[in-house]
Image (cartoon, rainbow, N blue to C red; front, side, top):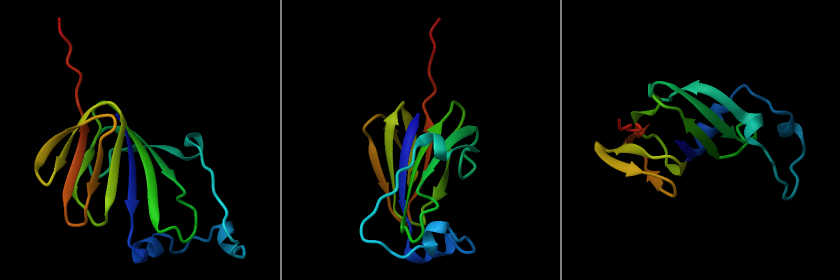
Length: 138
């Protein structure tokens, strides 16, 4: 299952997450406009399922090194046996399912999700996500 996730962090959290890191771009004079392009292959990192979700995932954290960016944009591939563990939400977060099917637990209620499903989790809610297991018949 592939999941695209965007997290909007409060300004203080965004500032603290970059503490001690000076990116070369932050030393340039501010310019009007501009853009940054990143590709999957540049940012992909294999990681365990977040929030003790188990298994192995591939995380794509786009624009993580862009200074003063007050949001996070991620894509995550959940491999069989992996997941995003059930956890309390500390900022607004959007999940968008690109492919595959899964079960998302939202404040204790299980909801089936699949391609084209978008879920907004708000601060103070809780959620987790597991891919559905494929059933085989003999």
